[in-house]
Length: 135
Image (cartoon, rainbow, N blue to C red; front, side, top):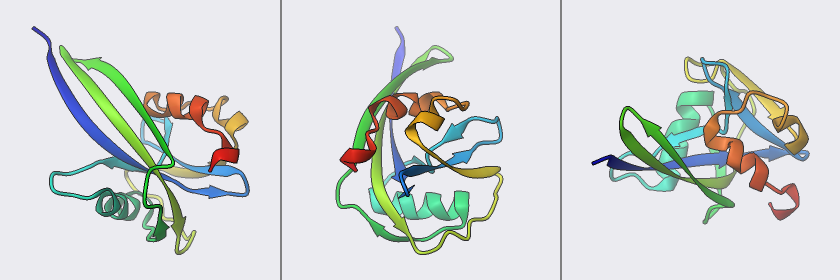
């Protein structure tokens, strides 16, 4: 019988002039900043930790509820991994980002531009669902 694993990932939806902030992972794929929620962590605590780790950034404001929600199912080593993604709108205190081991490049992309880059499987669904007018 296949094992099923559930994981909640919290993402930062940072938008400037109609463009979404994405980070490039070491494998070359682009992704929203953020990551898996640790046990006992709130979404806000998770975002603060992940933004610091990936960008050296501090949020000035995090929305009270997710701006976008989607799920992704992946089979990995005989396990079915169900991931639930919650993307919160975030305003940053500063855009003085630093390149880290987790984010080797940082870029701003329109919805159309996102369809032309190497997106991580986790956010391909987000890119289809995302409507800048809704945020």
